Amino acid sequence: MLKVLRKPVICGLALALLLPAGMNSVSAANEPVSALEVKPMDERYKNSFTIGAAVEPYQLEGKDAEVLKRHYNSIVAENVMKPINIHPEEGKFNFTEADKIVKFAKENNMDLRGHNLVWHSQVPDWFFLDEEGKPMVNETDPKQREKNKKLLLKRLETHIKTIVKRYKNDVDSWDVVNEVVDDSGELRQSPWYQITGTDYIKVAFETARKYAGKDAKLYINDYNTEIEPKRTAIYNLVKDLLAQGVPIDGIGHQSHIQVGWPSIQEIEKTINMFAGLGLDNQITELDVSLYGWPPTPAYPSYDLIPQSEFERQAAYYDQLFALYEKLGDKISNVTFWGIADNHTWLNDRAEQYNNGVGKDAPFVFDANYNVKPAYWAIMD
Ligand code: G3I
Image (cartoon, rainbow, N blue to C red; front, side, top):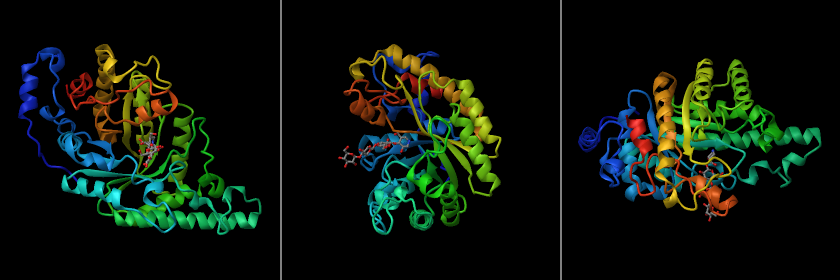
């Protein structure tokens, strides 16, 4: 879906004209500037790629929805399309929450990414139990292992067929498989792999291709795609699958990155490498953490993060989007893994592993939906 111009640009334009070059509105007026008053990000990049955000259904109303409509022309479900949410029990699909996101995308003329059809995480156990309820991964009898493999691939086919058919006219790009390579560059030892080898990847793409809309694109999605040895491992895997005729259209670079890491040079090399295989690139889950992991040094609360940190972040965002724009013919979508700093999985992580210390600020809009220096940097 290509979106038509639908947002007023006058306020942002006037504001930008009022400000001296290089100075953002916070420093100029010392007053916060709302994301709802400035130029839309998606218009800024309309000649290069769509701009997306990951959303939970509760964000489809109120201020989140307003910001979404103003700045983004693509959305993706942060959680509700994942196997555990959409297919919790065999044959019992729960589409209610996913449908809300699909409806919102349609009503607002936005592209839709589908995340994800296959993952080792957030997948219900029933997929991997044999007909007697025993874990397939523990099976030692070769005949029974073969039977289990067939059963699992059949379940996978049904899962993908049901979801992809339902959203055939809605989803523009599918994350067909997510995170199939581990950090050491080996194929991830997930139950999928232990039971079927790489056949689950082939079946997943073939089934998605069979039932998806003809213009829908199919992606292999992963994090740390810019980092060796993982980058080369994914490259070799995809090259091999393409040679076998597996219908992969592109690579999704999750891009859970941090200020200064990876280097812009490595990101450029990565995009060019995969484009060299004839693949599209999408930036699928962008967040630029102030800290990395574990969060160090971590400020005690969001409000205590100094302005200098936001400026440091803006400088990296500036380079990042300049690169994305330069490679615009090789990148079709850039999706942030959230809308504004008030909702990011990085905070759940800090909560879970770091006693809540290290509340992060990864986006270009702050926790009150005001623009940050990073916004001005990428709009420049
Ligand atoms: O919905 C339940 C709720 O009912 C329950 O009370 C609550 C208690 O913990 O959990 C809720 O589920 C949480 C879910 O997010 C929805 O909020 C899960 O615990 C939590 O683990 C889950 O985290 C998500 C994570 O994937 C799961 O691994 C994050 O929101 C989501 O941002 C994150 O996204 C992933 C991408 O899909 C793949 N790439 C990495 C990225 C970041 O981890």
